[in-house]
Length: 389
Image 1: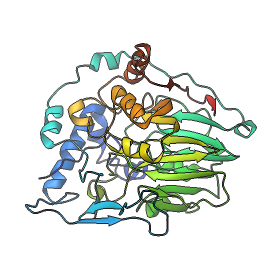
Image 2: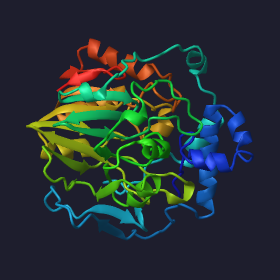
Image 3: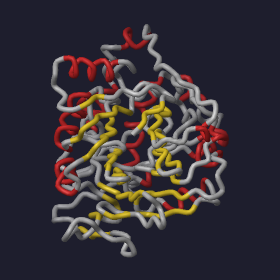
Image 4: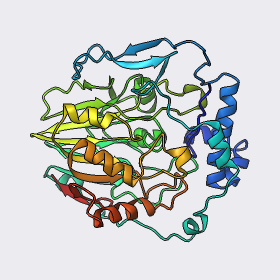
């Protein structure tokens, strides 16, 4: 059985590809964002039919290999490593995330029932400009939009999922509170390689000459191709990154997702989430994920999580997105499974990635809170707002 690959607009092409192929992409550029997204799904499926990027059909049980970084400690007793089938990573349950072709076809032939609402939307997230990042001495978290967060911990600056520009075919609706040129980052934490989480322009423009990227297995070469000055450490799930003489510890953990930057490299690179441990507090950054059993597995290892940063957007239509993302209700259930103390939402408002209006995810999350259904604190950051920890 083939599993369909679909992608966000711009997820198959980066800015350098677009510059080299402007004539060939004119037709794509002239179509609507939603139609382009649907076309990518159909195009990718056709690539699978001719054998590129596919998990081959078989009537027998597939051979599963397990891989990890043997130089790093594994924190889950008995864990053999990340499962791979035919050279491609799979999720914990050996599944490959993605909607079947029938769902992509249904989406392609339907209209968005919320199109008018989206067209008339005037939503914006309040912006707090940061005039001098060096003047911030306290330990804190700062949201830069989408899945990009700055952690200021013990005098070091950590940046998650660095996409601070506009990926190809995507408009950025939230401006940055600080220029990229002023982000002297010590550590990059990259959950996976989708273009709205890993942007080559951002990586190349970050000014620090001493950055270390903490990334999933097999991502090292990709990062070094974007910025030759970056030192890279790869980890598999349930492994601890090698940080020396730091006041914090960082672990790589599972997510229910997938990888793709071009149609033929599907799941050749791992994806995941992060746990940061600092001065007795724990910070969980989920990356992109669908709802799955890994949340409970993480809780068994980390029973007291102070901050859970969870995605709440890009969930419609459900029959396409459910195996890849969490909606607000699912994010709250994940927060409860993690037994977290404070929920910080992300992955909404910055880009138009799905059929729901950009304002809908946070509106629904606030409604859940107003109904008393969040067992903990909901902290909704504004762009550039300093959250002391």
